[in-house]
Image 1 (cartoon, one colour):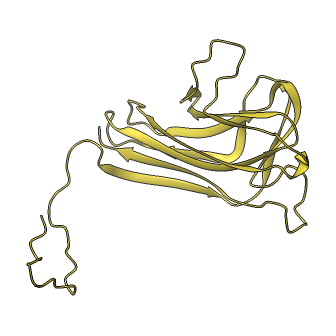
Image 2: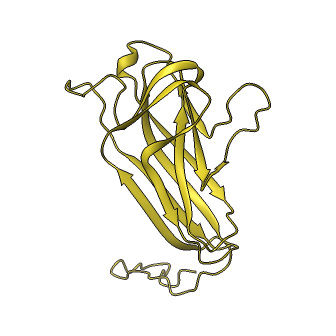
Image 3: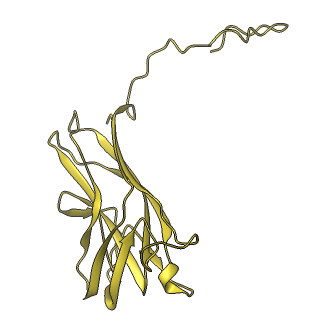
Amino acid sequence: MVTKINADIMDLSDDFAFTGAVSGAGKILQVVTMVKTDDASITSSNSATFQDLPGLTQAITPSASSSKILVLGSVTLGNGVGTIHARLVRDSTAIGVHDAVTSSHRSTFGSRIASTPYNLHAEPLSFIFEDSPNTTSSTTYKLQAMLGTSYSGTITVNEASGGTGGADYHIKSISTLTLMELSG
């Protein structure tokens, strides 16, 4: 309730500081984040095996087993061919993935090249997922990717898929992974 406004006068020199208490579920207890500013890559060779994306790992130690972890990711991935399948992993368990029961790969997010030239492809991809790890032990979240069994090639992180980035149109960017502990 704002009590410093009157029908005729509003004191703009006041900071209207909040003096109440915030309680209950959803309160932010801690935030940890990583920012990857360099390039990296993995090679995916006609395999359905997900691989860790270098440098896209962050750990958090929840203060209560009832806490939720809100995972916010923003990553730029490039590929010269096919489809990038990417997923979020807690410790060694894939989480926040599709329920596919077909031959499709269960992913959190992905990207498919739809135009040429392929060697300039890089796409910013973002996701948000709320997890319930039910622990007070250190918990590690990471991103993994692959091209799947239909394609063989390189997946790049923070740059276009085609090389060293010498031209002014070659994408160079950053990736982030942020974990927010929310009270349960």
